[in-house]
Image 1 (cartoon, rainbow, N blue to C red):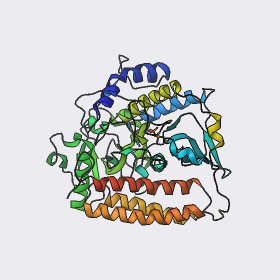
Image 2 (cartoon, rainbow, N blue to C red):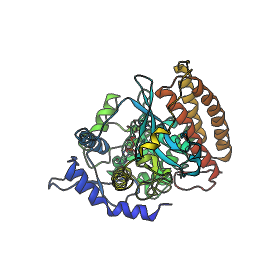
Image 3 (cartoon, rainbow, N blue to C red):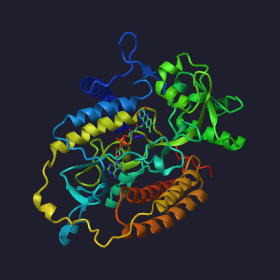
Image 4 (cartoon, helix red, strand yellow):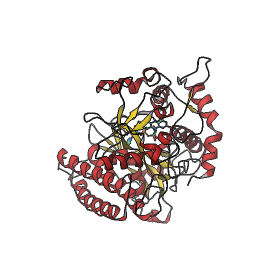
Length: 446
Ligand SMILES: Cc1cc2nc3c(=O)[nH]c(=O)nc-3n(C[C@H](O)[C@H](O)[C@H](O)COP(=O)(O)OP(=O)(O)OC[C@H]3O[C@@H](n4cnc5c(N)ncnc54)[C@H](O)[C@@H]3O)c2cc1C
């Protein structure tokens, strides 16, 4: 299901990303061997050790350096506390009635200042969507709270092509604890030798796949799900006793976090459950990150480059985000770098006069619970026609109710997120319903 052009591009540009950019320019501190070479690790479905990593927090190590570089760049203005509401597109937001004769074009975004409540127009010759994934649509997720599908929903409303939305990857091993968020237990723990077992100690993965605990993610997530249902257990466990490395040294973040919830991974197995982890689909882009809408790019998890096909291979998304991010920037800098001033005069101001109703937080919480349980139960790890029909119908009812609420209520980040969360859930459930073929992380049991 992968686009070979995209996969080749990624594979060929790895030295440019890791050696030149991450190490050469940003000085990211990857883990190294005693000889000073990059230390490679291995994750599920990998046939050799080939993953550069920074202990067990690679993404964090990259973000810290990248953000510092961005802060040092005079020409970049950061606006924390702002939420993009919608893309500005012509003809939709144009006051010129003849704009309908031109193709759809993106001229920037309407953005909410969370402090003042005002919505401003931000104009741009090129707009890049980089809003991340959709994990928060599910009851259990490894994703941060900002991964609620905002960019996907905005792009959909603007008429962007979206593909592969049924392929939501569930990570097999998120830390299970009643009081903890679903913290990720990296696959490299199994790569280093840890084994999944039922609570009574059975190495069940041997019954599902020749690679056992290191089978591909979709196989492991489904096997855990099945064993939990069969045994009525709330979790399975990850046994670290076969590890040849000291877990405290190799996985310091996992060690500290588990310990803070009373689990000492040097002595005890880790309780784990599957959780929504990565969105393989998204806004369709080419090898320059271009969408079908002029002047609109999409990069990172919100986009679909074709690299991940129906099931992402571990540790490819950070590379993809960085490579396509660079390519989108190069492309934008080289094409139509200015926006004609006459366009701006013809874009409608945001209309919010007469909206008086304040947000009732309980309504938002209840609607999110409904999205999360609907997606988890009906559009989750295993899917059937009946469940998906139910998901589409329930979400459509909810969308109708929230749209009304959205039109009457003063805008806030939570309301924007709820509206987008429902829209993104609808996109995924509908794509899953339409695709009757089980592939990768889209698994129909009927
Ligand atoms: C726990 C965990 C571990 C992972 N480990 C790995 C790994 O080892 N290797 C690997 O390759 N991949 C890994 N991944 C996947 C990878 O981290 C993500 O795919 C990647 O970080 C996504 O980057 P992004 O820039 O697309 O989105 P994000 O990093 O999620 O950034 C999106 C940004 O957009 C902002 N945003 C969203 N909506 C709006 C809006 N409406 N207005 C304004 N701003 C908005 C958010 O606040 C956020 O700052 C992991 C993911 C998780 C959750």
